[in-house]
Image (cartoon, rainbow, N blue to C red; front, top):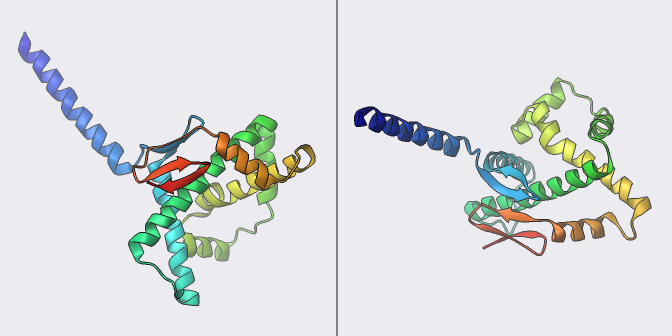
Length: 193
């Protein structure tokens, strides 16, 4: 009677181990939680990779800067900046969703993005500069920019001050839990530990 139980426990442990390894390998674990919304390590890695790729293209075009830092330090700073931007994107998106119904918000964002002419040349440039497909570029780069622009327009008539002032305060109020071990959230910014 004990053999089947031991076998199923062993089988469960093996299956759990494979599941754990696949989650680690695919980076589906959280990098940060922003007001309860998870940003995955995969998204952080993909965005950081795109930023680094873009940086290398700029260097190849314009040449290195005089105060160029070492590669590891550069990658760490890019990752910090990307994580900070991903947190900001979540804060902006949540504020927009509080102010505008989701369906209407999607239509407004699409309206802002319709101005981009998506042809073969654009697709090639996006792939070359960022390593993204056009769809991925829209989701990761253009949608957040359009969302920010929409919120700026919504805040101007309602709030005293500027969008920048609102964003500084919203970042300070945000409940952010950074899971990535080398960073911390302090005073509305991602900082190195």
